[in-house]
Image (cartoon, rainbow, N blue to C red; front, side):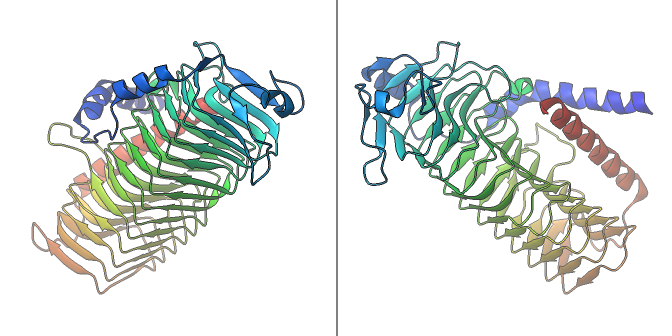
Length: 422
């Protein structure tokens, strides 16, 4: 049995490796800026060597020393922050470009270009790295072709990321290089950034609270657009996510609000896993990027796995997912007033999921409307079901076996990938 599971996982990995270039090529995401023009712009900036600012004296400069340099001005107060702007920093595949450590000063890094930060270790280097800081703003920077991460926040609070363009971070999908990494960093605003063509996650966020995403474009990244691990009190709203392998993933993350986003993903739109409880998923448009030339398994609009008490309302899920909404080992969820259409297996599926409220949903042209498998206590009422194949009262056994087995293979792949990252 173990050998069979290993074969399934190996098959999935090989298939992903082969298909990813085709997937990225097929994305309909268009850039708002020309890469060549951006590189010409950066060449006009003064070029400086990578540097670290550390008020504890562990870097190249303290703030008192940095402000004497031609690239820094200000006094570090809220009304007169330190400003680093319009410089070009090349990490030369050796180190980070800009790092700030152990700082409580108010800082703006704006209109800078940083490139070729090296990758070594999980969060050691990045295009811009903040470690033990607060009150830093990253505004209108161009962060590109970093072989590791583009931005890392480690134990850094009250940060603003606004109007940055972040692209081509990481070497390949198997390197697990993310564009933007947050760890134990809270109370931040992320708005109007463009994050695209990065090898792995657009945003990879662990153990963070009270962060607002609004009006970002996170597209054509190799894995998740946004992945939250052990996070709570996030707001993710009015964001475009197109052509990522998966849209938004929550792992052990609760009390988050995901609302009014446009998500067009290749595999799964929104997933809640491993006790991601009491989240609100409201008013999102979720579509599939899968084309007729790219047949994928387990493509699901919204997927709950071992998650309870979530509120899933008024979402529009369409465009030939295998399942519009699927619950596995998930109880006491509210699934109401969603519109789900064109699913190739079923609109809503519940497997070993109990005491859920599935009401007032509109399901159109799904192969099967709503299906329960080994469930008790669910309330299923006042739904409108218009099925492409007519009324189907049960789930055929061969189809159930196929779907569950493929779902299991995907779970194994995710767990192996996460163990390797940790």
